[in-house]
Image 1 (cartoon, rainbow, N blue to C red):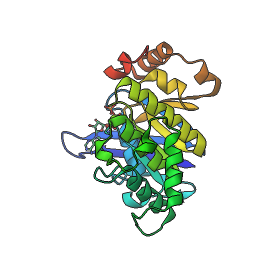
Image 2: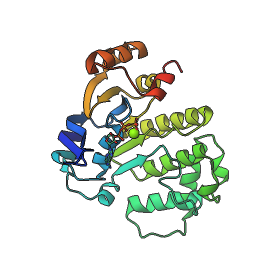
Image 3: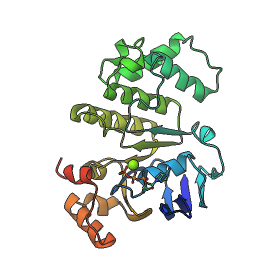
Length: 267
Ligand SMILES: Nc1ncnc2c1ncn2[C@@H]1O[C@H](COP(=O)(O)OP(=O)(O)OP(=O)(O)O)[C@@H](O)[C@H]1O
Ligand SMILES: [Mg+2]
């Protein structure tokens, strides 16, 4: 479904700051895979997502999505089939538009209808039912401007927007990291529901190792622009946070230096 072959990206080439953020990386996702991504700071996790979204051209390598070579497809064209959420809840929505207008925008994009903010009753009912499932009361606030919502509420709406656009791939870059623990828990729950219901192929970066092992069906660990560990099935169900941290030091010859990751070891 997603096939990345020999991906390399070096920033600031031929300068003192030269840095290879993705180093001949290979990754293959099956349709419906829900893969969690962990790794120390600067390992290249966000750069991997940027490569998939098309934020820059690769130095080398090939990216295929659903059998189609997207290596040279522009970012805004990829965005039609790739949904993305960031740590910052302000990204991805139009703050001055209401919840239902934002949802209608995402919906019209997916249906290739003309952009029209006059919302049909049937669409409004559909949005309402979807929001009800979140249990956040957002179904009663459909005419509220997104900018007035809390971070958790915004991420929930952004997730729904991503899913109604029927993406081939959903990219989540620490999308709960900026939320308070209760909101983060809620948004994770919603993530799980939305991914399951729509069978979305998903990549989720998290600094919470525990969460990485619990959510989804596969976990990859990145280090220095490469995938150093890729576990699923029984190996993954038997994996513990301590074992994973130990494997990291053995394989990379250094201690895991993602502070937030280590702080969340036991949570
Ligand atoms: N546009 C860019 N220009 C120059 N360097 C960059 C750029 N994007 C990323 N890098 C560098 O590439 C490396 C990988 O960064 P990346 O953001 O992918 O790390 P990460 O694994 O997401 O880390 P974190 O856990 O801190 O979010 C870092 O050294 C970073 O400074
Ligand atoms: Mg990052």
